[in-house]
Image (cartoon, rainbow over all chains, first blue to last red; front, side, top):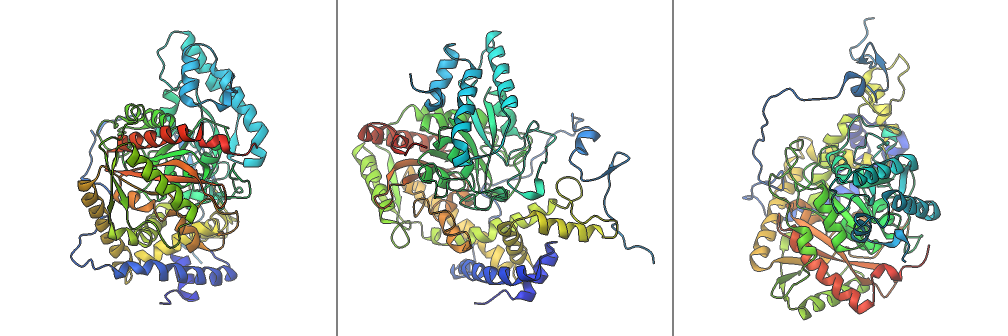
Length: 99
Length: 497
């Protein structure tokens, strides 16, 4: 089954926040189509009445006491930041600029 | 006396405890070995002799002051560059984290330090642990010490190559679909994937959180057990960590007795696609276990045939979510922030520049599998297959104590052979993936060389959840019997570097 078109890769790249070059789109389209074709084999398994497992172990919520504990200092938390201003992460504009 | 760097971790630990060598001497011997051979093997991404020797001096001082130290105090270790280390860069072999210095240690890292292990450096891997060869590293490929033209396995290929080339007696790895067992198998060493939740993921850069499992590499089963015990156990910082005692792995490694054990051969793993030399060594290992008193039966696990496709839906889905954190805002690379572009544009430019092709493929594959309209057919169906695989294991472990198979369908393949063919690369994980999906314990132990290429073959031993000690018991029995047959360890047959 042929699943992934070039346009679909462009859409997936947008959703994934990956600014891909034109030639990458063609390359990935062919590869993703092949991979999706192979993994689609899971459909052969009759599993209508089988519950899904999101995890290997049966887990319930895990709680801890809500106590103040040592944590990173602001300097440590900012130590890897690409840009810092006034003790905060400086980021590119998030909202559209007013005309 | 054997060169220090050829000694096992257990031997080094005993020499250190007896005061016959210092941790500084042992560290220096390994740093010298790295200086002599790593230009060929390329196992390490980061080395800092000063940091290493300072750690070794600290252990010697603690010992001199009469502190009671563990069995691995002063023993060097190579640490996979996917665990955070506050005193060394941590990159996950990605350009997006180039030069990043984490502000905290992973739990595995801090437990290595507490045990007095001396960290030699950080080892190479496939970017974000996605791959089976280290060819997906942004910083170059590691070479298999048995044949420098071949891959060392992956993703933990720097860690396997470091141990197989005597650069370190021990190393850490992570296993999401086979990333410890497959590199161990193809380099002729021991690698263990503990039970999921048996070792902490805190500070392990996440790839697929329901599968990622830290584990040990060593040249002997006992060494792997000593390291396993040193860094495993409950961690309140990882809410999926199991609050139960670590299985008695060291005791099991010291008691290689399989008499009366029931061993199941997985019927589905063999035949077409498997290298004849791999199957020949595997059959011999099974006969050996039988001769040691184990009861061998064939066991069918029909859903294992669908483990690979299920994994390549589940792991990319989790990865597409986990890797969203690399957003160019708080740490790591930022590209194109020239004052005119929006945060979203900078994010997309940074991720395109910072991630390699395999990571991009998996992020997009996961995004596809999770998108509305496809979710039920792909991710949802894969989760159901995951349930069936766990049921196959449950049924099998009602009949037998452990399951065995070849660790990999083939020996180490030549560098470049599968680099442009993702599906061919994925097949390297064919036999290892079921244990990740079900969360149970699994080991690879050397079982000989394939006749075709004289490259190492691994025997995989799978045990139930929290039955890790069974892997060590069977692995140690195989190791002892084969080494007596070979007249020494398999690695003694490796060509000199």
